[in-house]
Length: 408
Image (cartoon, rainbow, N blue to C red; front, side, top):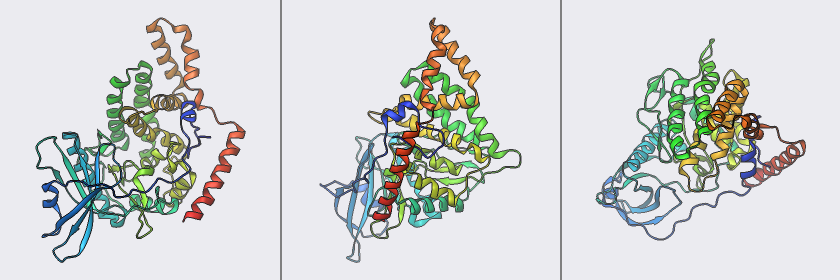
């Protein structure tokens, strides 16, 4: 049974495609050898440091990651973590964005992320290659344990302060290969999120080439986003711009093997609504969809008012992650999932407008008589799960809660 942290049930396509993994992620192990460019050695933070060796460590869809063993001028040995990306200017944006994100988080919560040391360009001319150099943290269990991760993430959100008092960031950070449209400073969270989501939608439309997808994108952006986000800052309600991780899923969290504390990495930060960071927890394919995570997070950081919109906001915030997955992750199955999710939101708040858009598309193709039937099929996944499935879900939650306690 595919379940979620939200009261809005998983759609039919996602229910068929996804189920939460039961086993933890296998921890990375050093292997092989990796040749380090001279530019990295020149960027080491302590003068007189010599590189002894470098080994592959962990995985990255977009580049290489390595554990670099060095000898300090004192004769002591130490480790650094190196990420290398060969995607031209995209790689530059990725490395610089992650460096600035880590720097911002480290200033608030030093042990919650690896300390960033440098980013730069390889001296080699071809291919155009960029690197990020950070503190090495020994990855233990993945994902991080629910209580510790929720507490530390909420602490970051609560204690961080936007340097301008506004939403945004001083540069465009990257979610995967997508340079996020967050590099402006806005008083309105609705405005910044509209820019961010709209940019991702514009990238997806020509790739998917799907008129119905375009239609629900437009209705979601024009109607649903203001309906759900403007109330956060109206009628006396306020939200503070919080420094967020930006891509908080299983593979970007871990327990530190040495300290047994939760930490995060692969960040693409900006100052936004704190609830955005839990948007990616909705997907059943993620272990963070276990309700222990959101339950403990809400104990530290209560839902924003109007609280009754929390579930719909959570679904809305999941869209940027899943659209990005759809267009850039090899073998992604999220195409129909995202379409169903947007259709669900449109049906919840603007059913007549949705029906009119679908009927208009059908008329353009000359098969208007099928409009109502296809509209119903597209949103069939929005129905609540059967009682038997809910019981199965509760049993799985109980089993996994015991498993957390056993491993902790």
